[in-house]
Image: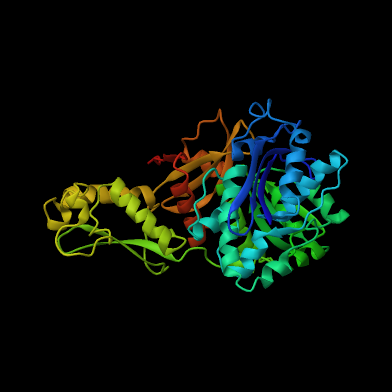
Length: 457
């Protein structure tokens, strides 16, 4: 019997977190036979970052039951069960911490779906719950809420059980106590880390950087590093003696800094991250009738592309979306290869470019609008995002289609002069990785403020 669960917490110092929400599904290997879902009053404030991530705030928890009021139910539903969770060491540690505050020793066997997924479904791009289940076609709603994440873990676990036909890996992976004891050195390093968004640098004794990472919650990410049983993590745990970090506020700035500094420092444990994270691109050409055509193809630095994508599926998703958004022709965007008019024309979504009913001049206006909105070619612009404090914003500067650098400015400071912008930014190198990071981020975050700049003559 399995108790598949997910826990949301307040965040904060290690072993001082409180549970804000818990969802448990009792699973017999075939069906869910019991469940328990509840908000929990942690009797301590929620970190602002966590409230933004989960949508759970202090007001919502004011009348929720306290942990001691739900503890009996948790014991009952998990008795004689193996605890199953995505990153089980975290959820199990939190449960043990809460029960220890009540003077109760809570002990269960456990199984981690991160560890199990890496064995049964190797070579995935990411093993975070959201990215993993999306890549496997498993539906996920209410991300970062206990019930949504627990349900996704149930579906993931069903898949893993079906793949482990001999049941040997699951037997080997079950642990009597998954709580890795973090030694004093690692605990001290983690407790000094912030819960903010930024880039962190792991140093060995001689000061050399051995790993660079970025996270929206540096402390939480370090906890994952220091409780992981993976061979690379164990080597890092042995070698690391100090950690420095830089708060960026913006995930975009963290991604850009991580990419550039890995190239500069070449940390021994970042080898996988040095490879390009994209392999598909969107290209344009004009056909014999004068229409702009769009085509997805393998990314080639020798060719000029409009934008790049992580993989072909992502590229197809966006070309479908843009074809509909800009009322483009499915034939001219490579979606429909049949003879005659495209399907979009049949449902009046295309205005007839496929049968030359719409003129190239009319059609190309919309195609050029798509290209301009998704390419930085010859453009001068700034991207405004979150800053490190409430009264600050971050800025990414692009000139003539090339990434120039990042900076921060006060909310009361009007950013409309490119000469002033050049003086406040930290210069950074333009390369294909930086361009992909910026374009990918702006596609996903539609509410970002992007300002087109007009240079003084």
